[in-house]
Length: 446
Image (cartoon, rainbow, N blue to C red; front, side, top):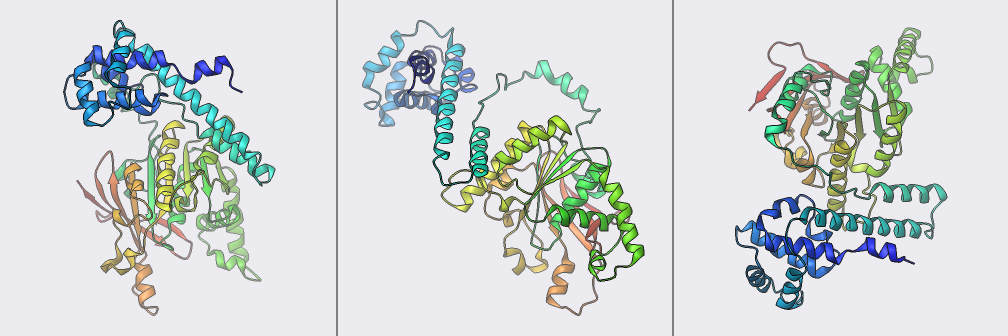
């Protein structure tokens, strides 16, 4: 049962009225209010309606006094819902001035977070009654806990006059920028940075996992720490692929009854190299919440510099959604939030839809991203992988016109140009490498 103290934490009618009354008394205080609270933060439905009406007036550059508010509420068919003009008058009477509006706004925000926390606790208790195993229950409870929104930071706006020299003065350092290890890619995107959500998309069998693994190995060799969430391949398969790729050995030869001794020795030698790299493969990160929980724990022991997710469409949102598009939208937004909150770049692999197959030259586009347009919106960088060799062989199995060329189209780059980075795919070793730098490895576009 909720105690009296809990009830006071659930809702503060006085603080909510203080925010609304201040917005009516002093229009200029509204930007500061909007930096702290939104309509859904108000616990009393009538207050949420009034707040929305005041924001509409402010956005239209109109007065926000009681007369203008009454007119706006009539237009919204909300005047009777909030208790008429008498209730507006009561709010105004309760607020002497707008001097304390920031305090009122923080109280409203804190009460919303408290309600969300209690709701999460109730959902955690309900999990104990579900027909799940104990480990499954623990995971569901962890997902709910990590899904609680901690709210906006105390400071989310920064005066240019206070921060311009600080930011620009730190630019030459570039310690936060991490190279992909592929020069043709870095020459377009400049590497990846903490907070970035980078999408690597392609049709099945294009080599997304191989390119992501190559990226992870390159970064780890530079001394960085990698968390690789593999939802499709086992850690054994990834380690075998990595060792064979580094050794220049076809993994199929190791699966024969009598693998060549020389090849086996080369792979074993590279296994010792791999043991020195700070990479952890995680096979169970199906939800963004579980991924974040592991990243937070890993940071304390080994550090985390880069996160790889293979791949997005195999994840679940960790909450009920009406359809798959909504679920992928939720996953995409949570991955972006994870990148920002944990201060790491996240490379997430993604499938493309089948429209690519019927297109001439089969080159992918941003619109081919599967299941949701939110992936494009949330990502800082979108890279589309294409190998024409794959289609040549599919359409003409006897063809000899196989040159290994791969194109990585940088279709979106929030901080710079787009373009096409040209790589070579060595199919025998399932690895990507650089083309010789002859001015043709990159097609940069503004």
